[in-house]
Length: 516
Image 1 (cartoon, one colour):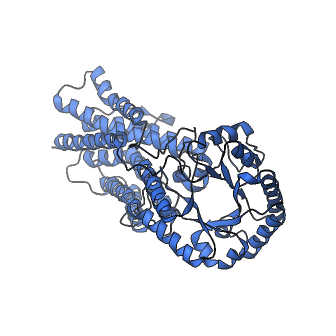
Image 2 (tube, one colour):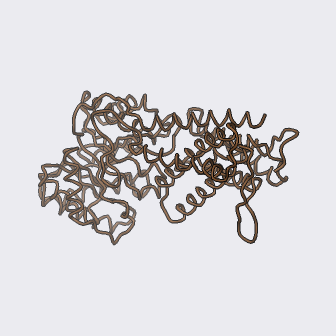
Image 3 (spheres, helix red, strand yellow):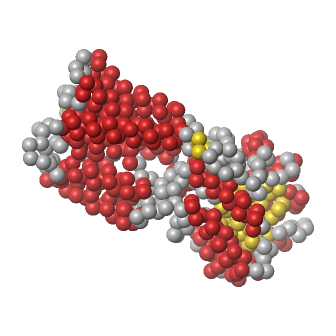
């Protein structure tokens, strides 16, 4: 009976895994954009090995020249956020390429640094005024609580006094902060708002995102009817966690850009899309999603095209091949040892190996996309190794074959009950993180799904009381995650379902369960 259940479930998992990879690798038709070029795009020059937190870093001029040359085929304008770390040369480089710049001056807590930044911005703008479409004094300073509206008005006045010819000046922040500080409009020539449907307090799904953006733009335009409005940041991420109904994906990012271009052109709205290149350093603050807003990846390969179909994972073949390699391990090992002596055993090894192999491949991809620091690489890499060994053990057990002995430190051996406890504890810790500090955390379901499916099917004897407590904690925390995330968050549903299955494997043990 157990082998029949294993055969059915592994077959269903194998089909689901194949369909998942097929979906990621297929070309999805989307309506073409209204133009080959976008109006403007945020430009941060930092590549995989660079971060603005390294105050000694100066971006080489040659790197900026290469970047802007690549962007000149995509846009006529770039927005910067600072003139420090070598970015003061952007107006000069842009002017040679026939591009214009919204030149940003970074404003933080320290007055001395702010004044030095404003002086550099004035110098760069005075040297190349024809390249300046506007000057932006401060970015989300009110949001961060680092200055008051009155102080920002003073900094704007300081920059204005340092210009040798009049140039339009603005301040940029999330649109709600402009509504809360309308007096700041008196200091600027135009109002610059940030409008990111994914990050709204009430996240907006892709189907209604454009309508939401244009409605807010109209609201702000009405509130500041005497000032031009620039949507200074608008866009959609291609990777990361889902927020209620707002799901990051390359398809959604491309769809958003194309539909927004059409809506903005139709309404006559000025805009700047975020952002030119993926910025891996942002993952330190915002998780996976923070580094995935670019129209080009961190290696400067174009991701978002204004025309043509979209493939969610252009490298889907790589991850499918890796899944196949993982899948061959249980079957290949059994065939070499001449253990696969009947069709059911071969089928479970093949189907279970494929399902687990896809999950392992997804783990490897998540590790590559989400890991930021050495400790994260170590944790994700260590769990991937445990998942590889554990999946091999589980598939063999489901096929009715002897579970191999895996030696650990101090003469201990890795057993299935020990593996179950590791999965319970690992997912409980991850669930607590999602419960109490979820905003920038992913839902890495693939890290635990093979364990959940495998242990539900194996029906091991119940664990000790302490481990049952961990299982109860996992079930409760996962339910809390689902409540917090909202019913529209399918990632949260998958996480909770996986957690409940894993917990049930420890808490609900039918009579006559196999002894492990």
